[in-house]
Image (cartoon, rainbow, N blue to C red; front, side, top):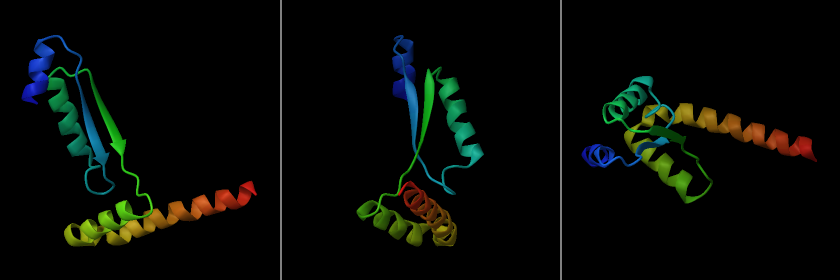
Length: 97
């Protein structure tokens, strides 16, 4: 934040990227409000939020490995939400045929 404040003093456009916003972990309203408040304090021009994709392969495997180690209680919620999305994708693909 110190660097961003310094850049703003020099009249440079500056923003904050909040990436990735992770479902059930960093998507809490209070976390996002704190980030926006800090950005406002520093007079930043924007805050850009972005989600996380769980592509099949190493990315998903690594994420689930860390999730199991650090947030094992969230595993059922992730399986439920990703399973529902996968079913919708399959249904859409079938409907297009």
